[in-house]
Image (tube, rainbow, N blue to C red; front, side):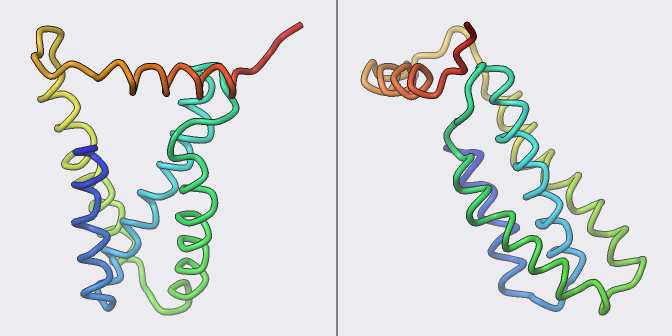
Length: 132
């Protein structure tokens, strides 16, 4: 949840300052990484065809990113693309890597509620890839 909330910051900044193309490019690439993570890495890891976030990234994030790419391609130069890649790296570090690494703990008092575990197991079972 924290990761999703932190990701709002660069998205909102890109909306507020639409002429900062480098920031839009960074968020566009961030969406591509989300697609790779949700469509492939998570599904292969969980042996499922679906996971939370997959529909959002396919239906919302990728179409927006493709439309943005088509719109900015003739407008921006090399510096914007380079700064966009740097923005992507910063976004990955600040919104995903650091929160996950700094907050993970095997001895936490913040236990996942049993209801959420049941829901997760139900979705995982329903989306499992069956092999005969």
